[in-house]
Image (cartoon, rainbow, N blue to C red; front, side, top):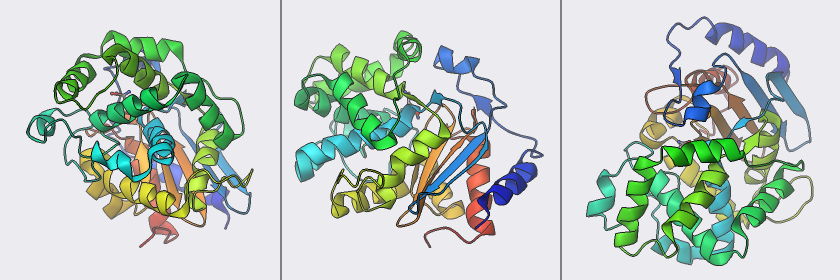
Length: 303
Ligand code: GLN
């Protein structure tokens, strides 16, 4: 398949679309990113790579990192993990507080902020040096050296009013075991990881390969866990837009407020798109459009 031609054809189509959303403002450092950036990268299980636009430029992966922290925590704790976080779509915004009170501090899923904070708490309990060990875990998947952005982590911490509310509420229900500041510091760091589209698509390829890292052949998670992580991405990866994303794109995936989206087609490829302007649901506006046209034109959804 000549993906290079398909990528530029689709980009030419979507760049003419007038309403393109706006760059995330609530994390001051993210508001500084050039909204015109656009990159795509696809890596398949035959080892082929296809890139378009700013595919080699680093950006803040934000909530996309929640899939990787879930993967690490799930591998450590197994099914016990689901006592503290659910697997249901929330139908609410990524940072919503509303369900947490009446569901007694148990977040609907690991990809809304509340759920990702519980996963961060689990990793703080399980790891001796969470920041270092998490980064080592990510680096073995992408086969390059990626890093946290101390500026982005500090910037998010400076305005963390909603996440502070979420974690305090969960602490009051006993679903956060460690010191709140320690958990939040770890959470802000994992969200601040910077990657290129190429690194991101390479990192997620294990989820297209039944949990096995395609380059090293190391088992990251077993087949059942890999399948389940993909199913949570399918149902919860885009918050209150998960249904629409599934309807239009039809691949499991995860977005971040840095404008990145990663999707996986099991047994074939993983693909990352980056365009910083977000729609009202906090997902990349052009990234979503691009993926919709991509899976539609070449009939590439999982359905
Ligand atoms: N770090 C961001 C937050 O906690 C992540 C949100 C996102 O990417 N959807 O708000």
